[in-house]
Picture 1 (tube, rainbow, N blue to C red):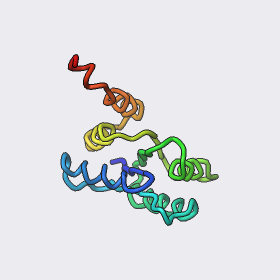
Picture 2: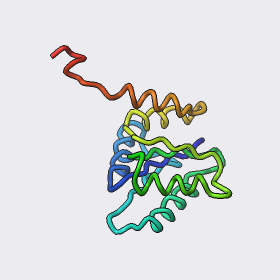
Picture 3: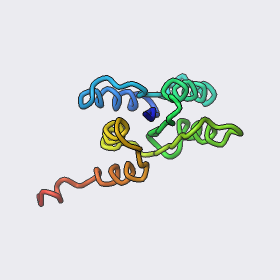
Picture 4: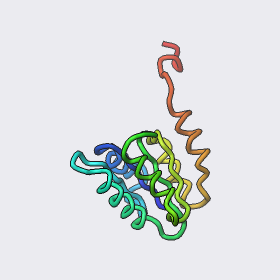
Length: 134
């Protein structure tokens, strides 16, 4: 089963993990990695490496990152460009709850297609007024 990490500036990642429990209960190999105000890029790099080693049980890790740019994403780029990067890490930016819920649902019985998760994230964004013709 793939590990899942939510990486964010501030506590957003923990909020997504906590909200996911409403739908799926407590999950193994699933954790938040929040950039705290007192973190430096170097300290966050160590924090995210520790999170990866904690959730990876040799099936790989999907990491959902809040923004395409910023310290969490920069640290993940550094990890992925190392001479010997950790096995099978896939990073998706612009995380939303729908993407994470789908990943949690799929990982227990099939491979997770990152492109499908991106599609779900894109489709979950909508102008509700237009959808209900208000």
